[in-house]
Length: 212
Image 1 (cartoon, rainbow, N blue to C red):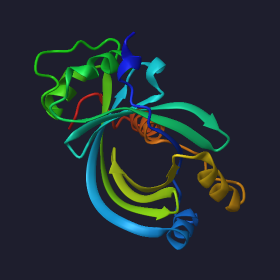
Image 2 (cartoon, one colour; image 1 turned 135 degrees about the vertical axis):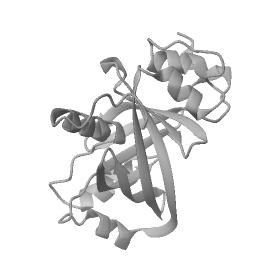
Image 3 (cartoon, rainbow, N blue to C red; image 1 turned 60 degrees about the vertical axis):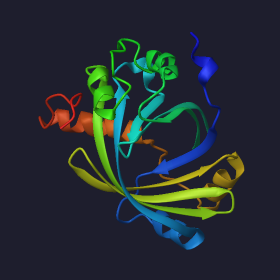
């Protein structure tokens, strides 16, 4: 596979939690970090159907850019991710080896890289389509970034908070200072798949592979 030639090594150490109303993590981050920017954004996640691709997290960011991250390992409560593709539409053909790795049963069709809609149509039925509407507050403390995001996805409204840094120690040290037990580290892909399974179990989902 020629995929390694085009990977952009962009490694980050990440922790993402989904606190409930009684959890204090979001308030603690607001206190300890400096607010930077608030944005409203809609991202479309194209989760690979195959179990072999669970470590990949592809999305169309704000209808303009196609991004794929890959979880490469876990260090205690922190996950290590790398961004393997990030490009605005229309996409270059250099994405083809990446698509073949993430969606091995998909076949590239003419014009599929030109627009988000065409890419989505090409990837069906090889992906679960999940539209996530976000109101995202970004914060920073030294080298460590944080976010507090209100989301709406798959009929559910909730909040997620995250820490991210290019080095392990700022994230690990901050989490250590919070004491235990920590909320579990659950990335967007894992959370979305759990919601798909939940909705399917109660008959609310026919086939989440197709966009609304």
